[in-house]
Length: 556
Ligand code: ARG
View: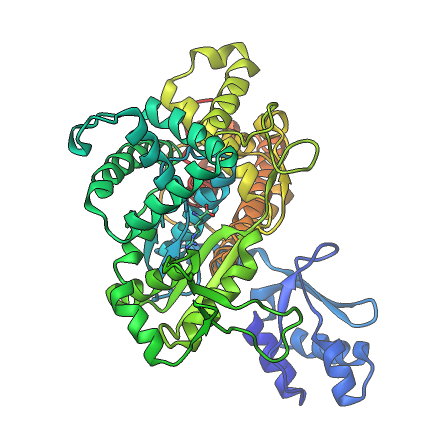
């Protein structure tokens, strides 16, 4: 259709690649290019629009494409397409291997998750996991090769603190022989972290242990490994529940292994500045609106920092994968930090590909402040999952007897759809009641729509005919035609909410159809057509839910 409009504009002497966009009222689509051209060609927009409309109406294949094309208002071109056109487009779409329109073929590392070993996952980690996994799924679906890396915080001060705790609790045991379990870890980290706040001496000791550990002290290394194994297997358990998976379980400790190679390289590149014994990289640039502090690489005492580990990680990724892009799905409050790291990586020529930080907003309580428990601490992710599960089970009597696997799928749908329906940059308020409802823009609503349609679908064969049978049928088919551009846009911008929005709109269209057509009474070609349409509707729903990390339960 854009091609035909392009041809007509050109034949009339206008140099433009016209854009045809969805129209919200009075037509299916519209073209607004007359406004832009008006200035260039010194003509009234509606004159240009009229010329185009008149000419397009005289095209020999007009009826194949259109039911009606007309000028609206001061120069919009309103387009109502023919049923034949809708069905032709739909047949093409149904025939395609994937729903996106263009194939992508990049190597992309996706850094998401970012939990800290020895500390429990809290609600803040939910978004990194859920959004990161969705972006990873979308990029993969489009044909890219992706490497998901969890990037554990596994060599920071919390490790020194827990090691100190173990040394005081097991003073006479060989590090190799120390036996600890998860309960021990869950008690020891908060205990030590509180103690360090009160006791300066302990704090200093813990920092020293951390430093020695980073320098490779073997006796600490043994304890570190025990903590790592315990904690990471617990983190994996929760990620598994959320269907969040990583190709690499690397962490900051892996980056430390790169420093012997990377630090001399940085010196060679001449980007390191000595500042009172510390090493920094200046990352200010002309035109910056705020003055960017330098990127700290090494402290006076020789200790490395968060930024050094991110640079070391980039160094390693370049070596291992030669990625076209590295993208980070990390809390938006770290955005300045990532500007510093990205500039440091560029300036030092560690990496000249694309680096992107997609910073997400906070999950807030009803007071619109970052979610806290009643006692003021961060809510554990596991407790949040439990709360959602309880809410759902108590919603209706039947839910109490539901298949456990189905319950978990629905809990996932509630949590993920609630999160992913927002532009990731925005904060949102966690309202379990609202998110669990089967009406409104919720995960359960989409699942319910899918299952409702699934019940009435029967076998169908061949391809759809050129007929359309009702207004709601037509609206549903038109909505299905949007799917490719939605996936393309979500992939291009790394914004899963486009898919969530579309899932909701498609579900509304499918429910409208369901309520206004007596599917059970259909026969013959009409029945076959409708079944093909409904089958495809559910194929789209299931595919897109899958991209958001949501699976469909058997019943609900
Ligand atoms: N562990 C970090 C934190 O809790 C997040 C890591 C994010 N990823 C990264 N490459 N820096 O804040």
